[in-house]
Image 1 (cartoon, rainbow, N blue to C red):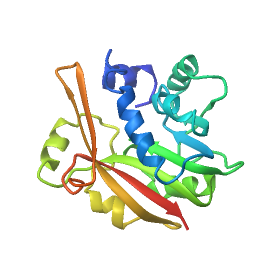
Image 2 (cartoon, rainbow, N blue to C red):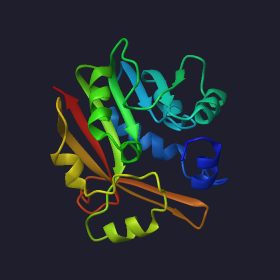
Image 3 (tube, rainbow, N blue to C red):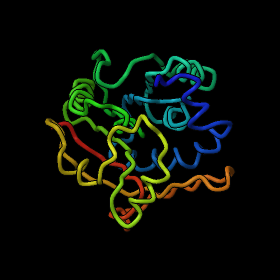
Length: 211
């Protein structure tokens, strides 16, 4: 399956923006600002650009996505100062390195996990921050996450320790937090960041540093 319009139509239908409310991306940005408050930021898998819309007042932002359709949609909604291009994580050309690379719900789609992390490392400055969000399938609700996950492109349906304890070089985990999320009644999107319940949440946000 390619990640063009048909994918977004199947995954989101008419609810892309309801499932990507501003408060969700503000909460992600709030977490990142605890570790980096300015500099250059690349979001891979940027979709239609809702996170970049929140981040660009703080960072010099760049976005990329494997989907040409998504990048074109992002261009319609983001200011010209946000540079956008099409490329998949794993083969993004390395140029001037970034302070932060973010990948929200991207890594579970990429078969070659080591190539994805190696590419992220090449895109980062020394001591740069790689932040990613992934769904997790362990804990008391892991069975429910798996049952509700109908995305055939999710090739890594793994437990949280798979992401926390098997990090490819040169990265080290500096922190992580949990994320509760669910789309209710095709209308309301629940998104709550929680460190207290991070061992049982349905997704995690992981903060890693390039050593």
